[in-house]
Image 1 (tube, rainbow, N blue to C red):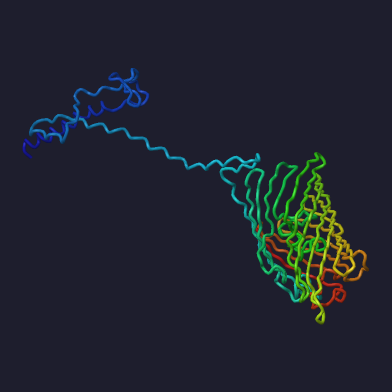
Image 2 (cartoon, rainbow, N blue to C red; image 1 turned 90 degrees about the vertical axis):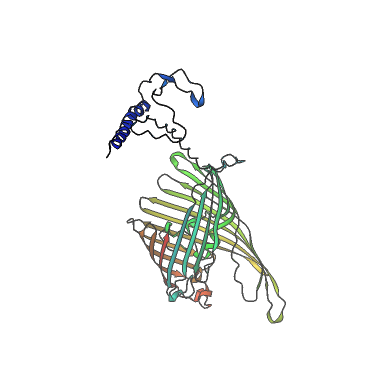
Length: 475
């Protein structure tokens, strides 16, 4: 390398070394260090300099950067050090905009009914049940049950939504197959809008479950009880769709009684949308309706696990049909008017894993048919039942029920039915259970001739057995 080349390299190294002190002097003082003397600090947002803390003055040997590229140093000469321009301070990142808050709903006319900005999650529950049914000697509930049948299926899904602290709504879709009843047709089992003003007063409107007896409201909840079939004297499964719910309104409430527990009351009124009755061949149905239904239940709930109360219900069926005449005779109009009065007393005692319950009552009907003398029918219905949770996965239960179709008639087999039932319930896990149940039945008053090739109940076997298996999954 020539001497001129060595001189040029040494000149560049010297320039770099001379620039280091200048760059160090340009560094800002550390946080907390005392301010250096110099020019006043500029005011905020471009305001005039303030007389407070000062910023350091630029070193005297620094010159402003020239416009355009810097000139090359002459060979053998030292270049004038030029300070690099200060980088502009980084701009703060713009703050993230919060997600759009939901619009505040307008205030409600009634205090306590204003909707929240966001509704709570909808509660969804569902269940699927499949059973097997077999009887001896007499067909019961299901045609050909003496041969065994799987026509015992239930499926349902319900939705409940809390709208405000005092307002909620719910709906359940239900379908079943019980012999020829149901045929898997989905229907609105119940639906309601529930507004609770206070503990002692609330109102429901829609198709609401009827609070009749202890267990009518859980007739569709297999996991809420031990038996497969509730006592049929009081809770006939064949009439489930008719007796479960009414369409109208309900008032309810709970009154605290201090050391005496509390009093729960429910009063309802409306109508029933019943299935069209099956009439003899050739008969034309013109009208079938339930013009009114009303009832209530009052239940005393004691602090020692005892519940005691009574239920009443009144309703009326109206039917208008045309019956064809015999041998060319003109058709005859038929009017049937049947008012009902139902009454039931209920008692339940629950302590630890033991439950004992019993109900007793009378159901009365006045039957007024065109061209037929008015008749009255009073039947007596009662049962006693107990169950015990022996383990988290196992609960046995037994009951004895009695149905007397007409207390004014003799005690023939077609006028009574006594049922002794025993059940074993196995909870496989919290969502799946299996039940086994057997019945010894004496009497045939609840065995229709239509399921037994037209044989009248008084001609059927008096004593017979019924066996059931049922599994249910629910969540």
